[in-house]
Structure formats: C-alpha cells, structure tokens
Amino acid sequence: DQQVKQNSPSLSVQEGRISILNCDYTNSMFDYFLWYKKYPAEGPTFLISISSIKDKNEDGRFTVFLNKSAKHLSLHIVPSQPGDSAVYFCAARDSWGKLQFGAGTQVVVTP
Amino acid sequence: NAGVTQTPKFQVLKTGQSMTLQCAQDMNHEYMSWYRQDPGMGLRLIHYSVGAGITDQGEVPNGYNVSRSTTEDFPLRLLSAAPSQTSVYFCASSSRTLNTGELFFGEGSRLTVL
Image (cartoon, rainbow over all chains, first blue to last red; front, side, top):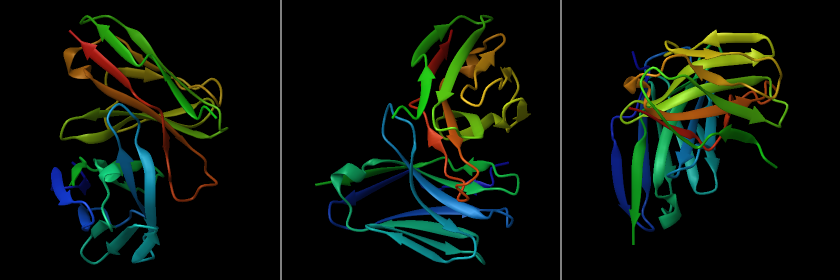
C-alpha cells in the first residue's frame, strides 16, 4: 500500500513560470520529507527537504511547503528553466529511517 | 569523487539465470540500500543495510538476496531471474550524521529478463 502518492504523472510549464508539484502521504509518523530530481539514464539527486516540524523550506528557486493537517506537501519552482525538465520524486522518511517514494512527476519546461 | 558506483549498467538475462549487481560507495556511509524503479510505481525498496553484517528486507524483497561484508560494498543477487524482475535498479547510501535522511544514488543498472 503506497503511503506516498504523486497523483500527477506529468506537468508541462512555460519557461519563466511557476511549477507546482504535489505530494500526499498517509503516515503521520513520517519525520522528514524530501524531493529528488532525476534525469534520464542517471540516478536521482537530492533537491530539497523539510522536517515535519516546519511548514516551509526555501533554497534558491525551490520551495517546499508542508501542510501536516492535510498530509500534503508541494514543491514550487520559480522561475522554471529548461534544465528543470526531469522526473521529480517525493519521498518521506518513516520511523525506521527508510525512505518511501512516490511514483514521480515528469516535468517538461517549454520555451 | 566516485560516490556510489554500480556495475553493470546494462544486463540481459534469460529466465532462470542468476546474477549479481555490484554496488560500492567510498563515502564511509553506514546505510546502504537497493531500490527498483518501475513505470508508475516510483522507487521501491528491496533490501537495506545499516552496517556491515546487518541486512533487512524492504518492500519487495522476494527473489533477491543481499549481504554486507564490508562498509563499502552491498551486492544484490538475483537467485533465479524472472521477467517480473525486468527493471532499473538503484543502489543508494547515506550517513546517519545526515539526519535529513538524504540518500546518495548510483547511476542505475538496467536489467532485462527474457
């Protein structure tokens, strides 16, 4: 049973606009949430994370928001650039220290 | 500056054959793990290890075997390959001092079972 869900398999956005990726989870015991970015034929690379005790974390163009009551987090990319075209995975760390991943969202940034 | 190294990058097997996917990390990380990536399924944990001599099962362990004799190496063995094991496999490692749970991934091994 998937405890981390990304319900949008794909997202297309114009260069310069905002990309918003969403992620829902069911386990209230997750203590850290992470976003990974993956290019074709490469391994996922860490992008940004947020502790469950915070509601926002920002790193340059990337901001992650956490809404614990709704069990929902989102990743905002502003402004979107062509190099942001990739698959983005949401992940959550459980009480055993293991990461559970969502199915991923393919982002395409168009000129 | 190698990080996590996986070999081979590509492999084709016939049903019933066995093979080992190799994973090595040079960051002295205690935690190592294997994931498989399948379309629409994301990354699913196969096996993991919190240190040399200690391994445990993840979400989808059936058909796979692991061992951890050193801190650096964490091989994944397919005992009798099946078409359902066609996938991209990723090895990942992390340090307990990184409390965020951040994993460092290898480049992946694409396996096809005919």
